Length: 421
Ligand SMILES: Cc1cc2nc3c(=O)[nH]c(=O)nc-3n(C[C@H](O)[C@H](O)[C@H](O)COP(=O)(O)O)c2cc1C
Image (cartoon, rainbow, N blue to C red; front, side, top):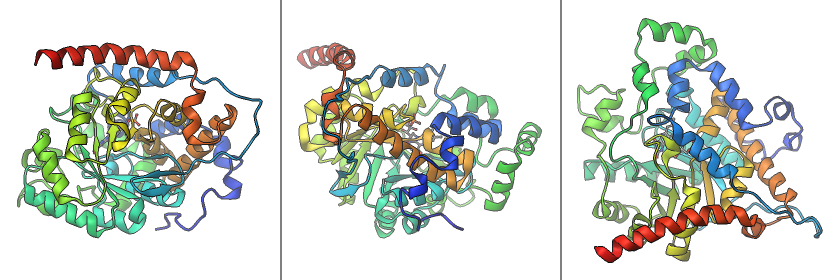
């Protein structure tokens, strides 16, 4: 399979002038095509959110509120997007967020995205519950690969999975802590979502209505949780999500549990999901290297605050001791610039990359990396900002004020709680 790894990034003809850039000039264009190409259960799984789904609009409006004041009368230079994260240099300050059941959305999507990340020299984070296993992604992405772990019930399984991630060359571990109570994604419930999709008459009809998806799925075979397969009890349904949650995955984790994982992993360890000061401080005390502030793309609850609103206060509290990234809602290079201006050191994107693969397969993965890189460079050039570190200075005064107001209110209530406890 050609994953496109040898092409240099960005290729000259791809500097915003190629065919794909005209046909799909934004992630929204890729999203529209993805919607047409996916059977409804796959589209709903990818694009849906928790409860009444108002979290999606909240995530969008958090980004839209961030605006810049440009500086035009200055010396023009090339925009420098290189950054160092966890002791390693990357070409851009964004990466690919972990996405579980990836093969249900589009077969081989994890492989396509890992190859695109390697080529663009950005991080690719493999979900523990993706349908491509650790070893395969290690071969494709090497040290560009980060491994995402959900807390597991059995320490022996945790140890074994982490040893495999180390042997496969993954350079960082991302422990996701924001799923203590399961999910209520109503569209998935209504669709009776399972992995692989249940062969009900309605689902069969939906698959046949989407021949490109059906043909790719038939070629790739039945999607399975490849990383976790060896640990499922004999006789368990090796493809079922319920089998995983009932036998392997724990409901949440506490500080002691995180400490135990820290002791098993000697490379950079990142905690994904914190949004509050208390959790950020706990991570700092345990010796975690980084955070991904996240509301899981509004997939766990519609009530969770967007990370942009808590970023500044958490950065102030943990200082330089933790590298702080964010996700949830970014859909463009401009959004990446917005998050960086508010203090994020890197941004992960989940749905944006999956829309691209569902729209165009492997070329979609490459296209999305190029598009986001170009948009980021253009957004920075427009405001007269040539280095990532200078983005905060271009923030329009009101943008900072909007987020600070929220922060102050939350901070006062947390401090009041500390005084009374
Ligand atoms: C279909 C889907 C599956 C996901 N699976 C996982 C997962 O297995 N592990 C995890 O930590 N986060 C998972 N996430 C959350 C993403 O890593 C990320 O936090 C989220 O997508 C960011 O929001 P965005 O989609 O608006 O970029 C998933 C997100 C989506 C859309």
